[in-house]
Length: 620
Image 1 (cartoon, rainbow, N blue to C red):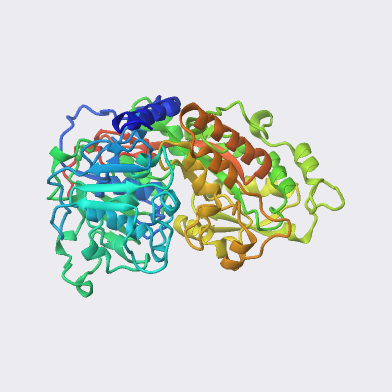
Image 2 (cartoon, rainbow, N blue to C red):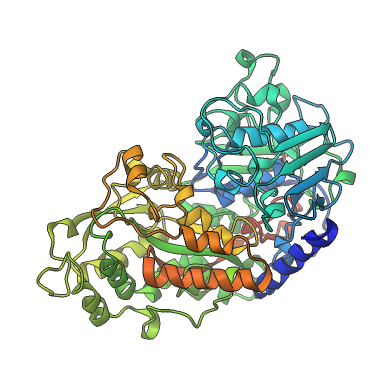
């Protein structure tokens, strides 16, 4: 990489080229749009509800690894580089946020230098200017294994001195802060997507005087996040940071009932051209009744939906009524919904069983249960076309109508050790009572019956276990409890940023296998030594690895990188087979006429809370 600006400009241009397929957004008001005659002005509160927060890292930015968490962080936190909160390819291009520009890169690609803007302060109760040391402390927290930084693999072994040590945060040799406005990263190897990795929430500045009091993730800093963005948790100004004993949870966040955000009085719009911050705040409440959420939107007592997929009746109502169509926003996410098979759990330790499952699943039925084509496109491979460019033509298990093929599934099963009689059915005793994990809410529960019935056709008889979204994720992201689950239909995966590697390292690298907080739910690449460390049974035939394929793609750039990850996707589908990709998702958001500006954030895959505008007079 030559020079600084030129090198980063090439990265951005490559990113735009890679993601150009997503440039078209909604057919029905997606992207940024004014949807009523009311003027777009500041004020009011975006009132919404969710069936659960579903957090997997207790809302602590060091480990929270959900798109919904990232959405709230776009209101609360600023990072060196960040995004504009818009739809399409442009919404995945990093821009300066805390940094004055896109940074300086050394000619060998190993040193990145950033300078901070002036006059950016933490919100209450800290109220001081943010320094480079606050950003460095965020990385020191990432490097502390006790805090369970779920995507530490993006930095471990990349930044010199980062390797997940035990104990509290400590100095990292590869990060220098020569003055309060300068931070320098020294890398071990050229990493073309490193600037985008600096946009993730775990890298946002953290005041040590507060965060040092929290040495464990559960119930810790997530309750007392100190804002660097336009909003803060309600009650932040009442928190006493004078000592660890005086720090109490901020009143605006209760994981069982609500998240209330209000304006950060220290935020200065002149330093932030990425966030419109129209509303005075956010009021997100917990409502386990999804039908009730959409009824309240229809009546105007809520302004819009957030995470929940509208029930089919709601989709039908808004898609057929011309007066309601402007309030249904359909935006393609960079997300795959999938069935994850655990490669260390019989019978899924046999590739022929995994291939048989791919042949038998009725994807069209699953799509219908989710609400039909409006909710997404049936997937034939793992990475969304916008990530690796394979498109919709490649589908190694494609069937007419995508309804499954019993004959091909049985032919594959006959080759399995779990079908010794070559009957086309899984006849070994391990094929009975297999745990299928799912969420306990529609449309996941609506799709479950079809999956159970399809598996039974090839002799896999499952016991469905339905849990709240967060609990379901925590079950499979903990290796020991995940090892009890044969197949799970609760996960979805969205791009962390605009690069196909975000569908590689997090999901299929052995480096992502950690005792708690793994995102490699299929256990791809697990070694016998790791199994012993985690206390789980290792299959006699071993587990296929994708590490060498991932590592061969990481140094590449441009078209070579895209082509390499296309081959990686094919390798997964044909030689590893960890998933049944179900569909590449759209996010369908329903809003009421009180929303005067709707914006979709391609980075998070949900409504851009930092850019939405409303006409109500509600207080947070």
